[in-house]
Length: 446
Image (tube, rainbow, N blue to C red; front, top):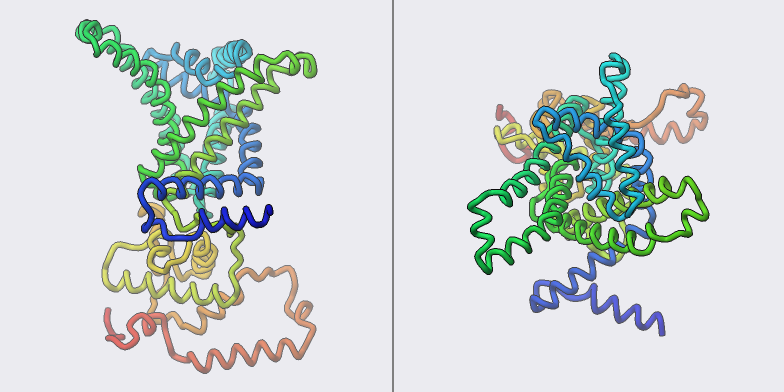
């Protein structure tokens, strides 16, 4: 009976074309599909482990991060607003949230940058940047991005977020507070139904700020292009989860006396770490929703996270990538990055990235970080031999821990490989990458 129900559920949810369904059913089926793949991702355990790792990084980085934000906000005279913001973030902890907030603010107030010295200041910046890097790594994993930003981009982009993020957030909060004190606004509020709408907006404003914060993280932190629509939908769902889980946590966990009885003096820090874990998990789930909204082809009933390329597939992708990039280069069109190549070849960027790294290591391609990771040929394509390319891809990843005479002890196997390489070289003799690009066309094109 269970198998029969499972089969009926699969037929109902996963069979049939969404475009042919009525709008209400299409939205319902699409939501159920996303919910199923999210449950599948959570059951695998990767998101849970990454959220747990973020708790440790947050504990190390929270005080330095707030200290930097405090110094920036102090220049604008709004540094006193850090405490209300922390209280709002830790509100699900109840009275323990107030205790933790006071402790953190005390640490920040007592931090004297002048006493730290040059080494201490470097360590402080490194601790903060490591938190941002950890966030990028986890979101890159969700978005199937293998490569991090370059070190220079990491340093500049992360510091930009650290310096400008708090200012923009408190500016938005201050704008709402100023509007409430404005005489014109007070007069308009006294008129119904504007007064009711203003009261409703005041209730909704904290939720909107959470949505804006999540949207900003989803748009900026992954090392790939994220559509605003996808980021906004993921942020709305994440904000709803954050509010709902916060209410449940405050009602049933933070107010329980069992934790104090079991953990005694450690109860506060234990609850704090649990709430940090839940917050990071919600952020990652929201990013997963944004990813599936932007990439619906990943919404399938079967898991396909592990990607292992065969030798034949690596060779195919290497030739195809160089042909695509060479075609763009000779046509004098804007250079392609990983996302562009993924669209052209119909292959996920997660599969392309290992081959792209091989081509970089073998000096066939050069990645331009200043141009959003676009690629250009690193060697003249009219002299790059096709047989050399295939041989380089075949040998990519070999280590030098063993000498060939120590590793290749079977003479028959060595002979087979040599004959295979010689036959391939003979067939492809004289052919270059440029010949492949303009096969059937003008191969003398500059």
